[in-house]
Image (cartoon, rainbow, N blue to C red; front, top):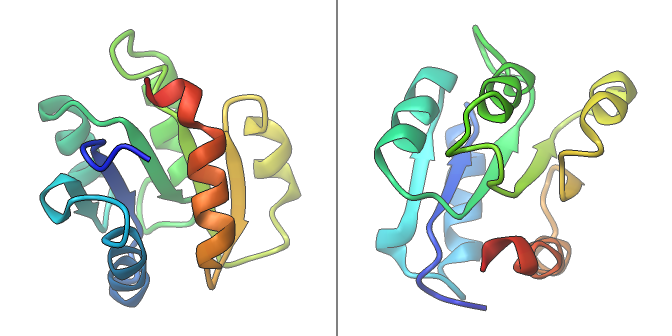
Length: 128
C-alpha cells in the first residue's frame, strides 16, 4: 500500500474515528489522514484536499453519508474517489443496494482490521 495516499474518515462517533486512525497508522502516514464528524466538514476537506479514499459512515446527524455520495457523484473532481462505507447497522439494505455500484466495500462496525485493509487493497486500482 502507498503510505502517501490521503484518506478521509467521516464518522460522527469520535471513538470510531480514533479506532480507524490507530488501524490506518500502521500503513499510512498520520498527516495524510483527515477526519470529519459531519458532512459539512467532510465536504470542506474534499474540496480543499486531494483525497484518494473515503471511509464513510452512512448514518450521521443532519445530512447523511448518502447525501455526501450523491453530491460527490455530481462533482467531476470528486466522483471517482473510491468509497468504503462503514456502518453500525445491519438493517440498511436500501442504502446498500442504492449505492452498491458506487461503493468499493461495505463494512460493519466494529471494523475488522484485516477486512479494512483487504477493502483498501481491493480499491487499489482506483487509488492510482
